[in-house]
Image 1 (cartoon, rainbow, N blue to C red):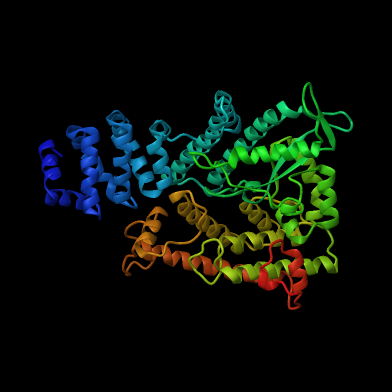
Image 2 (spheres, rainbow, N blue to C red; image 1 turned 90 degrees about the vertical axis):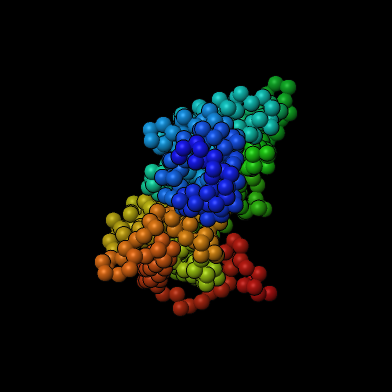
Length: 544
């Protein structure tokens, strides 16, 4: 666009409106404000240079209004010096950030606040760094932060920068689910490792180094449950943790107060949680949940290996066996972690099931169905609705508990790997496996697109049709999509997305119902056992 034409657009609401319509901008008033903001930030000549690629790229975005508004905010903060990087190679970097700006307000705000992050998003996009590289980067940042407040910011900035990198690869390159979730989990592992090292230094200055009763340096491991344990974290997952140290004893050191190992490692745990979850001007790095540890909120923050194994041996319940399917050493002494994993396997996967154990598995089956029934009435809940993510994960874990004693090859913490192993072991038919794998990937992608919008732990589809249509576009549904019947009318992205969503969740629920009912007949009700096996029963289920 010529400079004179652009100047007329800025001066005439009518001319500006025509330009914005060509760009698929819906809110004309805000669009004119964004044009004025860009002209002020860059100058009329530079904005004129930007108009052609904007006219080409904005209509391809899921939400052109959101993209233009965030571009205005970014360039107002970054200044005109960032324009050459955006426009090089046929404006490929501009295309990247416009897609980010129209898909995630969280990523948009990160880039606007940290314009230097732009270098990481230039084409070709940065591949996933290894654990050693990430550890070095975060250790260097923490080491350079002399004050505690700067240490906290270092953890938060590290996570935010890595999430932006991962999100760009997810949105722009459409990387596979397992690559994205493994990468997100590696970021959490790295944060936990450096947080544990930092906590050890902080606590060690006051209390010295812990030793066992046999006068050996005491070891500690952080074990991750759930999606962290399975290396399948989503963008806004809590991280479920348990702290285990190898043996009782006490600390020693020059000019330090001596405390017992249980006290020492409880302090380590509290410090790790503080480093990662304390609220700062950059928010939290992670929400940390310790409730899956032995005795839950009533139990000690850290336990010795012997005490932990004794608890599961004498008091462990079926829901804890289910949780332990997805446990993994994530930071600290890997040898101690593997020792725990090996020792706990006979508790989790039992070769022979007694009548009492079969009744426990039946109770777990009812618990799965009760939870699905409780939350599944709404077809807008991606996680807890009928045929949703929870249905798949709970049922796969159920099959692992029922068959894992005889089939060590199905003992996988990762859901996708567990499904494949169950297929190879003939616990799933090939058709069941392929259907569950495909629909699970589809639902997890929806979950990711919902969560990266505002970095919130949400699983509910939007209520408004226009917002739901934008989600369909962010999922990759084109603006016109034909049915398999060549003579049928083309589908709008919203219609196509909802058709797929309903078909996939219905198929999921059909398969999962078949698998659950096939495994065990559960006509015999045992509500008391259900309550004993549920760590957090609903109040109305408890009878006096």
